[in-house]
Length: 114
Image (cartoon, rainbow, N blue to C red; front, side):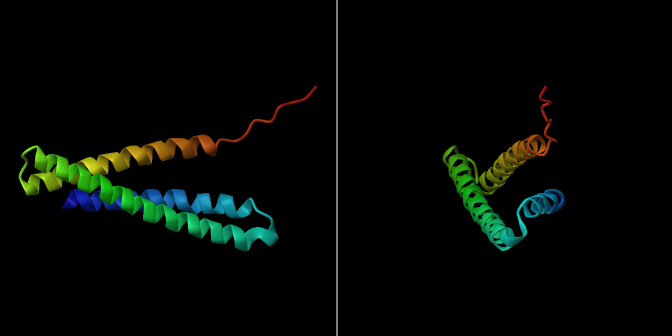
């Protein structure tokens, strides 16, 4: 149980550290008359990401659970193994996103024209 609480807390901290600066970067990059549209698109993107994330997670979990049950595991163990495997996929995806965000937020080097 403590592992789930720890993982959820870590995920919450990660969301807080990423979402706030990301939203700020997006909202400050648009002109004043486009702030409403940008805010709407940002909210739409966030909601679509949440919906897709839940759908992909449930699909992965159910697929792994069925694979573990078909391989002869007891239901309880199949449930736990599929949960762990799904979370490992989530961690891998999160690390990929962290890498992409790190690359995306690097300061751009300006070329000097002679």
